[in-house]
Amino acid sequence: MESNLLHKEEIINAEQLTAIAEFEKSKPMSVHWELKTILYLGILLLTSGIGILIYLNIDTIGHQTILALILLSCGGCFYYAYKNRLPYSNEPVTFPSPLFDYIILLGCMLFAIFIGYLQYQYSPFGNHYGFATLIPTVLFFVCAYLFDHKGILSLAITGLAAWAGVTVTPLQLLNDNDFSSLTIIFTAISIGITLVAFSKVSYKRNIKKHFDFSYNNFAANILFVGALAALFTFDLKFISFLFITLICFYYIKYAIANQSFLFLLLSVIYGYIGLTYCFFNLIIHAANEASLMLGFFYVAASCAGVILFFIFYKRILGIKK
Image (cartoon, rainbow, N blue to C red; front, side):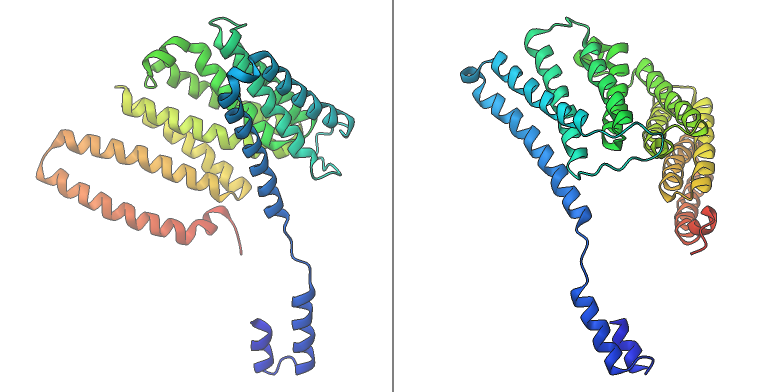
């Protein structure tokens, strides 16, 4: 212990050492994140249990009864949230009850289950599968902003991406599993750009600035994956690589501005994947001894680059400590 070391070096005396030891034993220990994890797991287990219960007892309970129970539970969650809500604010809002966030999250997940089950069993939207995704997505966005909930915002962004994918090619996606489709890739890139643009506008207008990370976290991964899919799948290699370079440049600037190691790491990893693919794609076409040696040199140089990155990343981000 540091206190023992200080006592050994005679910086503190025995009485002070005893006082420090007593303080360490009696001070309260924070279980904030442990409780949050348990509550989130509880919601996941509850919603999973509802799904298993429905599956095992569908013939006994009946579809309409199950739908009614889910809807009533969902309504109860939203009623509690509405009664205990605080006034809307563009700044972060802290609710007095620690259970509030989890009850509204449970309500949103139950609503998604209700809509999905209703569409599966009775098909009120017919073959327009996008409506079954769009309705919960709209509710999630409203709840995320109304109740200042980042978890529900993540659900909303995921729902938006799912809605766009299902709306563009629902039958092709479900029947052929054609995830390399140009339409799907273009849609993913469009969603990523939309999220980035919306995040920048919201940040400049001081609208929920603390949501900026969530938007960019999804946008960065969607943009990078879409751009890499285009690079791997289609012949326009140079344009795809140029687009990946532009995304890397944007998010490296974003990482430096916000001192975010995550976005710097994402830019380096995705950029490295794109660069490595293009490099070996070129030397494979050359197919000679010089290109083979160049490949070995690239691997060695890139390994050294990774080591240097982890050594100097704080300097890149401008972090002094």
